[in-house]
Length: 95
Image 1 (spheres, rainbow, N blue to C red):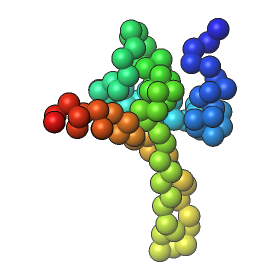
Image 2 (cartoon, rainbow, N blue to C red; image 1 turned 135 degrees about the vertical axis):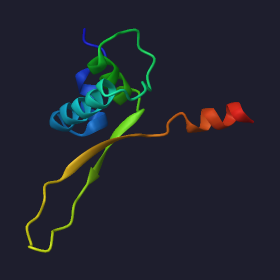
Image 3 (tube, rainbow, N blue to C red; image 1 turned 90 degrees about the vertical axis):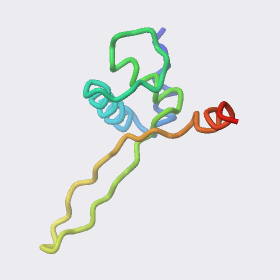
Image 4 (cartoon, rainbow, N blue to C red; image 1 turned 180 degrees about the vertical axis):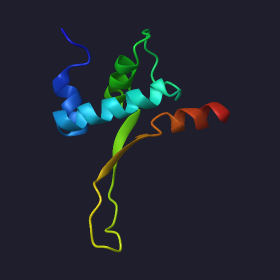
């Protein structure tokens, strides 16, 4: 059985396409040296990215660019950002 289940990942991202894009962008961030947000015992960045999505540690933020002066629309970008899911835990630890 695949873990985490694909159906549950799709529920979190909205579609298989969004899941693939979000996982790919987060994997690229990890390859480029971004810190891991999920405790997974693996050296594979793709597995870490998928687990971060499953745990709700990251989500895709849709960034829409406005039309330039010439009137041509630029493509929509997706940015993967940390959700701050552990922010409360961190603040409790500091208290």
